[in-house]
Image (cartoon, rainbow over all chains, first blue to last red; front, top):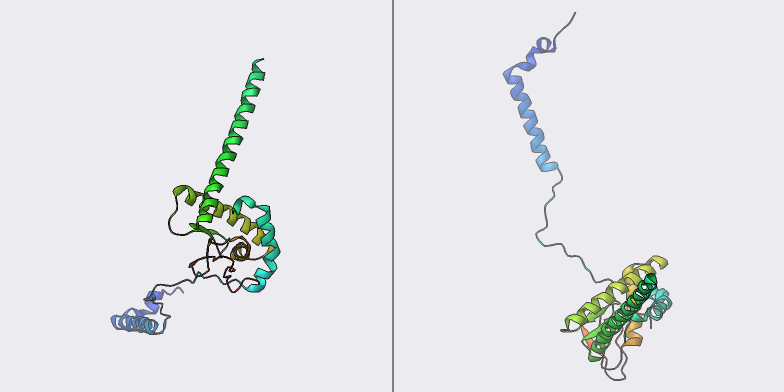
Length: 79
Length: 131
């Protein structure tokens, strides 16, 4: 025998049942408002430090290459 | 006979162009050399040329052109050695400051301040440059 959902769960379709469900949804929303991760924009501008600090060991390693680069491109290093 | 004339004309044009371009490049580098001697252009610790105060449009353009070519050379070196372009540039900056700034010539430190090499005194190198 076929049973329609509407007729078998007639209780759910009443005004009071719907109001209850509305309340439940509102409660969920309220919980999210306090519990969800909040992202706020910083009030100060984000500063990126452009002072590049190259480690000395890297510069030591590149010493010879730098010398060769200058010698090989005299037009880029006028005196 | 006609083709020969055209060949001569083309050769002449190529010659004229190469002399013209060469002369132009020489004149430009000359302008930067003069500015370096005068202290209006100087080597920077970051590996590029900088303009100190004001300079002519010709000098500015040539400094910019040199810096673009330097960046390309630094990029090649950086890729070859697996370091950052800034590191390759800074390593070259250490070299240019230590060996290519003559007395009375200007140079720029990492903090952006300019200094003029005083007589036989050595250039103040950035702290991270190899001694």
